Length: 353
Ligand SMILES: *Cc1c(COP(=O)(O)O)cnc(C)c1O
Image: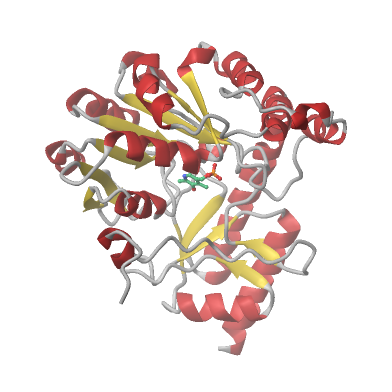
């Protein structure tokens, strides 16, 4: 047998992305937390009028146009921002810069599975600490583990809850390593942790244009942190990680806050309606969510069966076959019409059962 790979790569499973059917197939896709609304018209205008001359040259290594747009919107200096090929790349850069065998990566579970995959690739030591049943942060254990990197998704996936600001502040104060606050769903939440970044130099807040801005296909995310922390991350980043198209289109989308906020408001209103329908018409347990998805537990405990039956009807939701989640479904909030189709399909399945 030839050993092409490092032992940790040979041993690991690899990340499995959610199912991605071809565009324009008749599928109601509620499995990847994409936004049901199109990207900003201002962003699409930039895309349509993009000058080919800018493709002939290498792009700006800091995605400066996007950084400036983001700096204006967030009210932080542009040199406090690092831009990534999706926020996944920022997560990867943090791990590559800070972790190695013998250094701990720490996070509460269940959460975004990519933290685990990226840590395995780096061969870092991994400490996973379970959330309580009601998703209270295991604060004492996280502090005691004192990771080289600690990941907290807030709002968290797949639970949908926001980690209380006091808990995040306590972590920022007590941890000697880097605290990553993954705010992928912040556009659907009532609070955020950006303020901690200016107070604590070990904190980085990470955001994305994939969810709130309807641009998952563009691959654009960013981190906000003290330039002292970013200086190490910039050594690890590929020079030209953001292509010229993503930079220009992303800058226009970021500038069009009114459009993003209007879409988020629609999603939040639909989230309330969908939660009510699932509770009242189907008896599901539905966790409170500050995201564009709902974690739900069907009454009869047949989550996997429902996932399969919905898939047969071309409705995709997310099922995680892992302890603590295998009796639940994660359902992305779609348009009211899509959500209604889902609820009707579930009602029919219940009657058929
Ligand atoms: C979707 C998601 C991301 C990845 O976002 P990209 O910018 O598309 O890479 C990161 N973190 C969490 C928790 C997510 O759900």
